[in-house]
Image (cartoon, rainbow, N blue to C red; front, top):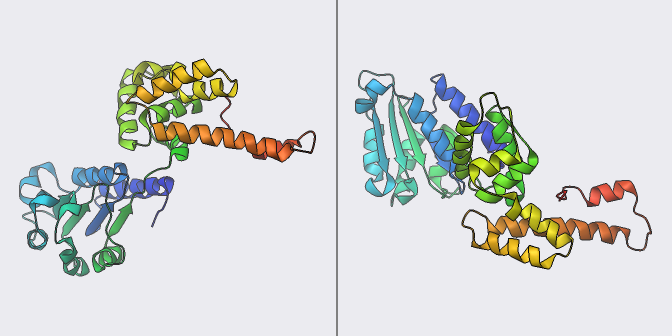
Length: 292
């Protein structure tokens, strides 16, 4: 099972492509701390599984707090009405009090039913029979929370998937504003794309500032720069702005500062007592340091 955001991305793209071509698994377990990918897959399955004219008779959507395992199994065991398949979706399935009872159905799922269990910011116990039965007969999307240090690369990859390139500085600024909430990044990108001039192929810092409403003047870039130059008054003003802004992710800010200065200290330690630092050692020590 995929463990990082890029492999999760590839898995979800494959599921979406299969759905668009009418290829479905009998069971989907969509779970994990990051809800973006599970919800994306659920939308794609609902979009393609049942034709719009057949949804009233062959698509059932519940929330876990409103249904029990017996109802889900009963619905999943029904045959489609004048259609190729049925779709049964349980959103927020972690709220089902007896979800483990679905293991018996998942051991022998009906091949004309597509059962989707969507858990929000939650996961099944991988040691229990329900998870094991789904692993044997269905598809599991396990979406871990993305780390702060990986968000810039994710944004660059996400923009590439939308046929856009983005300046790394712009990606960092967007990540700084949205934090690691991938759904927020996707929504902000939708807004940005609508406002870009026709034919735009590359997104820059100015585009993020204009359309997302975040300024590099009060960014981690500038905070790092002012701290590096010992400009305490400016650094404190920027830090206060960041701390008071609901748009900024404080954990990401702390992580970025720690990483920046840790690498600088690593470089300094590498050269201590050696005079000048060999270029290759300097490059390794400073790898990934923000140019600001």
